[in-house]
Amino acid sequence: MVTDFFIEAEDIIKIYSDNRTDVRIGALRSVELRIKKGTLVSIIGPSGAGKSTLLRLIGGLDTVSSGHLKVGDTLLSSPNISTGELTVYKKTIGFLWQFPDKNLLPKLTAEEQIEFPMHPYGYSRECRKRRVLELLTAVGLKDRATHQPSQLSGGEAQRLGIAIALANNPSLVLMDEPTGELDTKNTLMIINYLKELNEQFGTTMIVVTHDHRFARMTPLTYTIKNGQISAVDRIIEETHSSEDRLEREILSYVDKYGNVRIPDDLRQELGIHQLVRFTINRDDPKRPRLEIHPVND
Ligand SMILES: Nc1ncnc2c1ncn2[C@@H]1O[C@H](COP(=O)(O)OP(=O)(O)O)[C@@H](O)[C@H]1O
Ligand SMILES: [Mg+2]
Image (cartoon, rainbow, N blue to C red):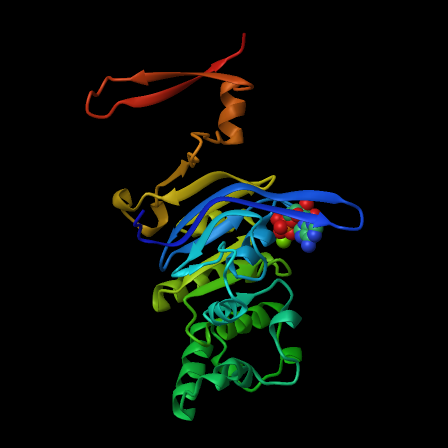
């Protein structure tokens, strides 16, 4: 199947097994994702839902138990993928973690930190300096260029982390709860910077969060619960009239077995429990619709 998706995940299953206790934990169950290049995506869900697991799989830091996972030209779910191919793949990705000390080197200044990951790539000094300045400006830290991490606030440190993650022009940036340690003001600031950077550099970005404000601000949001994608929420591009009034729609994936996940709020509202009845509505013969009716007897 030819698609224009940059990230394709089909029926991803991840099971962690503990050899000592023989306990197996199903962290992801039949996860489906399709993400186009250049999209800013959020993945939202409660603690333990499987968000970090999914991000680690996409980042090539762990392997799927089964299913199809492809990012760009790299088939991450292939059992034959070599360590060399994975190493090359990981270099095309920028990571940002929840705690600034995992993203930053304590002894280097802000500008040195952004420049550091560029060294192995043979950029000229002038090119590196230009990129550092561009990124410092893009995350609003131009006047913090010579500060060390201990001299930065939590929000500034995470913005620096974003700049570092973008230093090598990655094709994908993965962020795991980047605002988990921040207050509301700094969280909103980070969301806005991410939106701007996404527009400015066209980098595909995935932000894992449990903060619902991301859901309203990213064009595409996946909700994950109990290891499954329970809903996909996206902006309807064709109909929006102004920035503040973007219309959104909530979608569900139909997996290859024909299973559809009905979002919790709709199930509750309609009293859908175990059985549903399907009917086809042919009021518009050109666009027949499937209707799902609760069955409670
Ligand atoms: N390395 C691991 N070994 C065993 N179980 C794990 C491991 N990592 C995560 N889990 C389990 O998998 C589930 C999903 O975890 P995780 O992806 O970290 O969730 P989230 O990031 O949404 O909080 C949880 O039940 C967690 O305990
Ligand atoms: Mg997590």
